[in-house]
Image 1 (cartoon, rainbow, N blue to C red):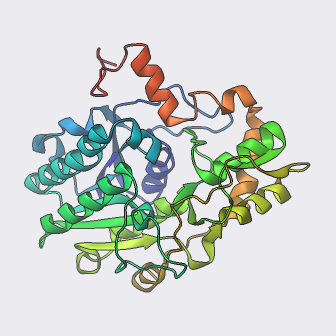
Image 2 (cartoon, rainbow, N blue to C red):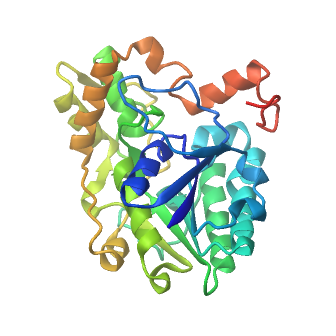
Length: 344
C-alpha cells in the first residue's frame, strides 16, 4: 500500500512513519517542518521520503497513485489553539476537509484521521464510549469534532474515512514534546527532582504511547473497508485511564529521589474524562497495544538521562510547540498565517 503520511516529521509521525514502513508499506511524508532542529539527541530519527508542503495547499494531482492518507498534521494542542482559534480552524479543520476531498477526487481509497479523546471535554465519572455527547472545551478539540463530522459525510463506497480518537499521547520520539502530561511530569522530575502537578491532581486522562497510536493507525489501514468506513474509534485501553495524581505517583516511583509537588493553583482542571475503549478491542481484536504509563515513564526517564536533558532545554522552545511557533513568528520566519516567508 502506498501511504501519504502528513505530519511525518512531528512527534507522532516520526514514530508512525517507520512503523508503517516496517509493516511493508511504501510511505511518503508531507510536512512543513515547523519543528526541524527540535530533535532529542539520544534518539535516532529514521529517514522517511518526503515532500515539503503545507497541508493547506495539497491538490488532487499530488495524491495520484496513493492508496491511503494517514492525516496527523495539525496545530497540536490546546495552548496553540488559544494562540489563534482562527488558524486552528483553518489548519485543523478546513485543511483536513480540503485534503480529504482532494484524496477522494484523486482516487485514494482510505483516509485515516488522527482525532482526539479531548473532544469529550468534561465528562462524568463514567467511562465514555463513542456514542457519548461531545463537549469540546478548546479550539483544538472543536476542530477535531468538526473534522470528524465532515469526514463522515465524505465517506462513500471506495472512499473509507475513519477517525481515531487517540487518548493523551506520551512516549519517546525523535521530535519530543514535553507539553504532554506524562512527558512533562517525567521531565520535571528528571530536571528538578519535583513532579510538578499544576491542578489538584483529580482530573482523569486516558493515556496511550505513540507507538500504540501508530499500531492502531496501521490496523485501520489494513482493515476491511466495511469495518471502518465512516466510523470513529477511541484508541487506548480501559486499564490506561489515570487521574493526574496517579501519574505523579508513578513518576515519583520511576525517577529516584523525586517528590510530587502541587505547583499550580490547586483548582481542578475542567478537562476530565475517562474513556471506554471496548469498540476498538471488539473490531480489532488482534491489535496489540503494549505500553503502560509506568513503562512509558521508564522509557522517558532513560531517554532524558541519555540525552543529558537540562532544565534550560526542557523549558525552551525546542520541545514546547507553542514556544517554538512564537520564536519563529518573532524571528519573522513565519508570517501571521503560519506560512514560511521564504522557501524552507
